[in-house]
Amino acid sequence: MSNSYSHRRKRGSRAKRLVLLIVCEGETEKLYFERLRPEVRWVASLNIEIPQTKERDPLNLVKYAQKLSSENGYSITHGDQIWLVFDMDEPRRVRKAVREAKKYKYNVALSIPSVELWYLLHYEYLTTSMDSRTVEKRLKHHLPHYKKTDPEIPSKIRDRRDIALENAKKLLKFHEMQNRDVYEEEANPLTHIFELVEFIINH
Image (cartoon, rainbow, N blue to C red; front, top):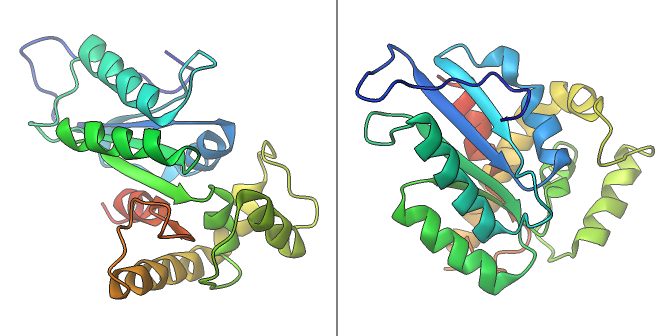
C-alpha cells in the first residue's frame, strides 16, 4: 500500500464508518485528491492509490482495484466506495475498462481528453473538442507555471472550485443534450471528476 491511510478490514466484521478507495492513473490526480483529504470526515479511511507498475492503463486500474478490494476486505455491498480516475487515452481500452468497472459497481471519473480539463474548468467553460496538449496550453494562460507534479496547484485553484463544478455540470448536460455517450471520445471535452469531488465534499 502507499503512504495513504490504509484500513484493512477483518473478514466477517463491519466498521462503523466506510472506506473510500480512489485508484488513480497518475501523480497529477493523486496530488489533487490528497489535498481533499482534510474534507473527508465521513469515512473510516481514504486510500488514494497508484498501481506500482508501468502498466497503468484503465483496464489495469480496474484489476488493481479488485486486488486491493480483495486484500483489504472492501465491500461495495456494505457501502464502501471505489473510484477509478483516468484519462481518455486509448478509446477501446477505456471502453472495456468502463464496462468492467460497472460490472463490479466501481465508479469511474473519466476525463476527456485529460485531467487538466478539470483544472481548466476552474477558469473557463468551453465545448470545443481538444487534445490533451491543447488543454494544457489553455490552462497555462491561467496558470503560467503549471506542471503536472506541482503539489501547490490544488491549493492555487481551491477558491474557484464552485466555478469548476458548475462548468463541469453544464458541460455534461451539453453532451447529454447532444445524445452523446458521456464515456466515449465523442463527448470531448468532458470530465467526471466533479462527481467524485461532489461526493467527497457533500457527505
